[in-house]
Length: 504
Image 1 (cartoon, helix red, strand yellow):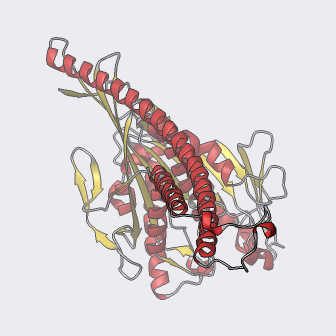
Image 2: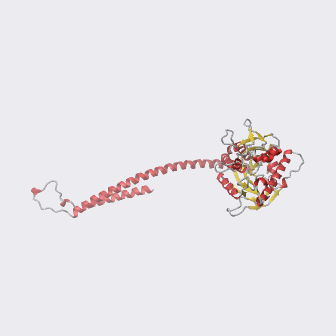
Image 3: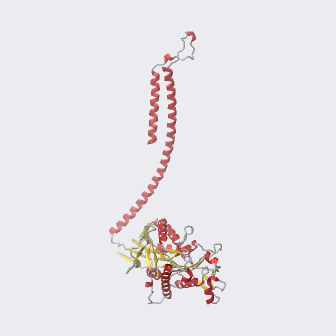
């Protein structure tokens, strides 16, 4: 029998982090001024200054507005404008204040979602994905996730992790992991709705991963398949919304309640396309059409954020106005812990102000996040299950003992291998020495045999002419040959035995 966890619903506000990017070369060239500042005392207050007439990048705004300062307050404001500034916040600062917490929530069983929002060229993709030298939230979160999974696996928790990656381009969902090579285009997917799980994409590719390297490979495949283009505002402008989803399933035994617990959570990391104005981007043709679809979906998202922030009971939230809001309906106002990374340019007054207003509305949204947990109840009267549980516990203990024993054998094997290598060196030295000695004896034997077979005759001397140093060949008989042959056979036998010992 299975039942859903009865944990009480907890209301969670959407967390909002604002990040101010540096001035780019285009802005520096045209003499743009920084209009944004962050209160360094609390790191939560952002101040936006209305541009004056001398600012060429905001002439439209300066003509419409009086001189004023606008103040906004968020969960955290990250100053990424100047690396030389002591208050500079890089990629690690963004991850520390947001990513770590959401990885932990995912492992607790909560659905989580982090999405980057802002105008085109405001640093959304950099914040979410980053570069190989300076990775963003997505790779940092995946690395931390698998490090924690490795630690938790030691506590007898079984993890299964799968990933999917899709983009929404011109209101069409495209599978970024379906292409087998760079030539093949992503597959278009149909949007469906389940009465139990809500909106989903039919036939979306999901791949099981077991390490951070696996995830990183799929992220690269998806990013390479994603649609980008150059505009006046951004050389590599993302022309689609990209949604990377990590599904985490964990199963373990609650020994206190004698129940098998299964937790399943979704961790969504979203890089939205940037809002843009045609006169600013200089878009025409297909780029202009793409921009229209991007603005349409972002307008729908803004409308949903506004409705949710007002919190009016009985109001119908317009999730179905776009594919983006429909697929993310649960993340925006349902069972999810959600965060928004609002990226702004320090010099663009109108666009930054628009982003900050949406971010202000988003922080008033409340979601109903619960632990997605299912427990399999064990009845006390069921003796078979009790016995099976005991058997599994005993088997696990035995397997651990065998593992420790194997580790000990492995250590002994290494020691024996070292001893064998040392003995091999000793025997090789002895064999070499015996071979040299054998060769020397063979040489002496050949000389002796040659002197016997070919004696040197001298004139016969009288008895009075013999001395003690004269060689008497007549005294050498056949026994000498037999003695030398025995020595040779003995040496060969010793050499054969040493060779066998070395091989064994």
